[in-house]
Every structure is written in C-alpha cells, then in structure tokens.
Image (tube, rainbow, N blue to C red; front, side, top):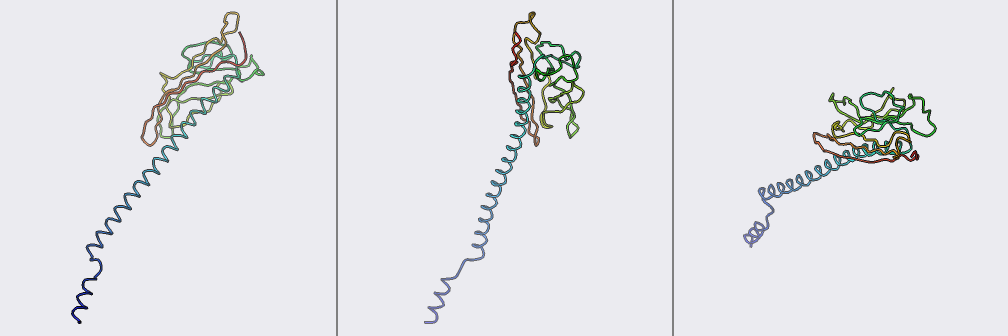
Length: 206
C-alpha cells in the first residue's frame, strides 16, 4: 500500500528546471519583441511629428508671403541688392521681391518697404545653407522664416513677377509666382520638397 502511494506521488511531480527555463526564455523573447516594436513605433511617431512641424513651418512661410503680397503693391524684382526697391519692376528670375505692404504706405519712402528674399545663413551646426528671409524696413534688418533643418535650392527656387510696371506701358495685373525647392535634413535623413504658389495683386492697377 505504501509503495503505491509513493508511485502516485512521483507521477504527480511539478515542472523540471529545464522546462521552467524554456518557458521563461520564451516569455522573455516575446516581451523583448513586443518592446522593440513599441519603441520603434514611438520613434517613428516622433520623427513623423517633427517632420510635420518642419513642413508646417514651410507652409507658414509660404502663407505669410502669399497673404502680404496679395494685399501689397508696387512689386519690384530684386537680385543681390536692395537698390531702388521703391520702383516697380518685373522679372522672371528674382531672388526676392520688395513691395509696399498696404495702400497706406509711403510710396516715396524705401525704408518702410517689405522684402521677401532668398539668402544665405549658417545653421546651429555651422553648415552654410540657403533660407527665406523677411524684412519690414527696406532690408535694414530681417528675420529668417525657414527653420535650420530646411535648405533651399538657390538654383531651382525663386520668384517671378509679371505686370509690376505701372500703366499705360503695362496693361497686365501684377502677378507673382513663388517656387521653393530643397531638402529637409532631420536625424541624418534627407527629404526633398517642392512648393509653389501664385499670387495676384488684390488692388486693381490696369
């Protein structure tokens, strides 16, 4: 009778140490795989959010230019300097545009001209880049509208202005096309972009 009880007890023994180690190992593998996927998804989300923030900055720059140019007048195509910025002038390949920001501006005063232009700057890492700048005092001072991560292509980007000259020599309503192309560099990942918009002067001058 005692031997039968001992045999039953020996048959009802628990997991062996090897079985326990295998189970724990499988559990660790599953948990680590899940954590890796979770961390990767979080990293992708952060990158996407930061890229979206940079793209929003570019969109803001384009919107700021479009809104103010639409309500402005006396457009002038400018290249490397801000000479004669108060004189309207059309141009197919402009590095920037100067204009009166409202109908209440002083036409004869170049120091209150607004200017949007493409210029050079050095980012936080000491890298030379090209960005979009804005001046509200005829070029005396300016602020950069594009973030450090954005580098504008100075060859393919630019502004074209049609019909800026006053009538009767010109019978076309002033029309501006802005094109910005370049690269966004974030976390050593380079993403090309291309933006373009067109603006017609709201004030009729034909």
